[in-house]
Picture 1 (cartoon, rainbow, N blue to C red):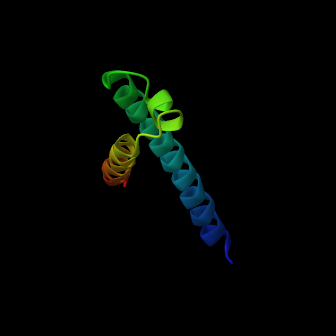
Picture 2: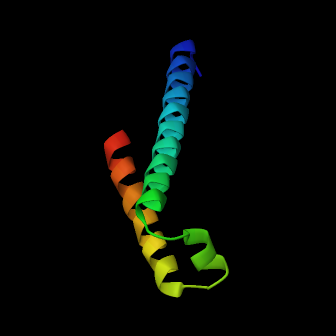
Length: 74
């Protein structure tokens, strides 16, 4: 590979790492906001009470947040 190709490879890798980190941070913040907005203790409901409906809701919110962040970052 030429020097120019290596420079592009390094630049693209750095950009991918930066956008991945940004996406993960935004996802964590969005999930934390969702947790604060919901009434009650989500982890107690999930782990102790085994609330399946809440698990499905949290899964849907996680997927929705991931899709929105992926579209915004890309």
